[in-house]
Image (cartoon, rainbow, N blue to C red; front, side):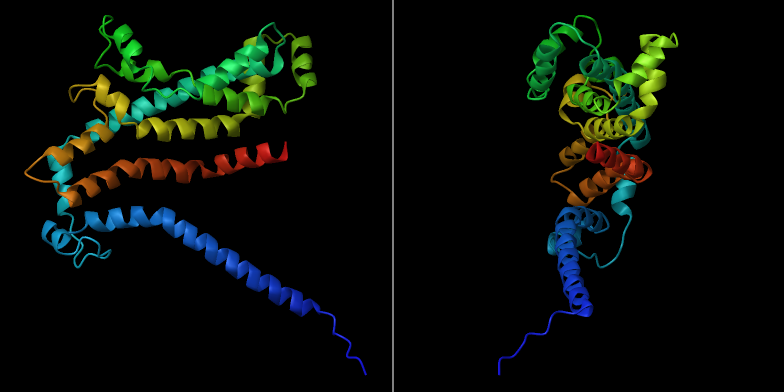
Length: 287
């Protein structure tokens, strides 16, 4: 007599799904650990003493949590001035990029003119050019104007963002043209349409773009290093790098403490803006 296989029950499906969910969660936890692990090691190293760091550099947990490295950082560097310079620079760049990317993206998405496609291709080509390539001509333009070692030299070269223009353009493609035509019939000008009608509609995209720009320029090392020579406009990443040059050797616990101080404002900004980032990603996924 042939045996008939018993069909799987609802409990069997639930058990299989539970096992699959646990495996996925475990895999994601391992990936997250790979990302967060170096930061946790940096934080742990900042609480060690130099002797303990030399004796067991790879041991993740300090025997005693000390704040000597942080005291040394704040005693050696004018951290608050450098932090203020960095925050002002990154915020100005992000605000200018958002303000200028909105009309540029509007022109590429909603206006019809000869050369629109070549203009969009030029914007995409700009994404492939690193800022180090344009450093020499920009420096030669800013030098004779007396703008080197000023906040203007740190902000103006990055006021326009090809990446931001691309993001805004893609977001505006999902906005119906009838909305713009209705605004024009009501007598709204182009600037009113751009900033008062379309701006709020793509606010999540602008917020995400501002955060990406802020994080990139906040942690930028090359451009402030080339454009600043004194404490007046020097940024925090450049100052933290100077910690390696003090003394007879690299005091890694002090360097790690400086990097913890450097990353704290970015983490706070991400916590405050993560909802807008998720909303922007969700909006692009549904459009």
